[in-house]
Image 1 (cartoon, rainbow, N blue to C red):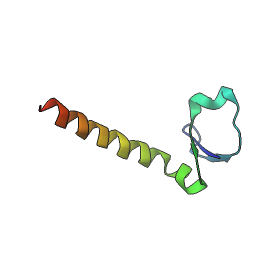
Image 2: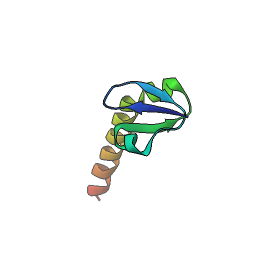
Image 3: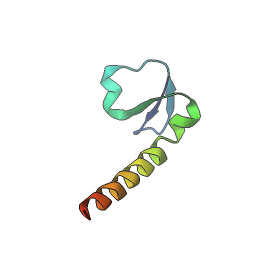
Length: 58
């Protein structure tokens, strides 16, 4: 398990403290996937926005 810390922009491996859950994104299957967390989230948000726009046209 890998996690991306949105405060430090570092990747952590293994379990994380519940105290840090508001500062992390994940879990991810690899360190590379965790490093891409912000890009992945941005792409998913854009896709969801497009879907909602299409639905609003109905």
